Image (cartoon, rainbow, N blue to C red; front, side, top):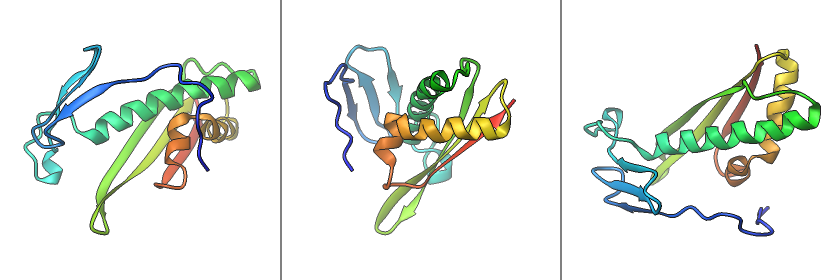
Length: 144
């Protein structure tokens, strides 16, 4: 299934040179500028940001924002929630693939309610829609 916005409200623009090993990325507005480097676990020198870290932060921010929509529909304040994101990277066929684990803590609810909220959020989040059916994504909700 394709999820196409009815109207584009915002477009992020960035330029990347050099890729994951010794590259550089910068958004058009200059608000984000990073040196890219492969982590030591992948044979790189470390000392820079890698695409998996950027994806983890982006997915986590998007998911936590979408959690607010799910919470509002249920009358639950999710403003104190936090999302821990793990993006795994490894060989897949002739190339590489990624996996995602989202572990969401929602204060003021029990585990079952938190799981219900994150399951609904997984239906709403644009990153979840983009990854659905393409990569393994595990979503776990915990109350606090």
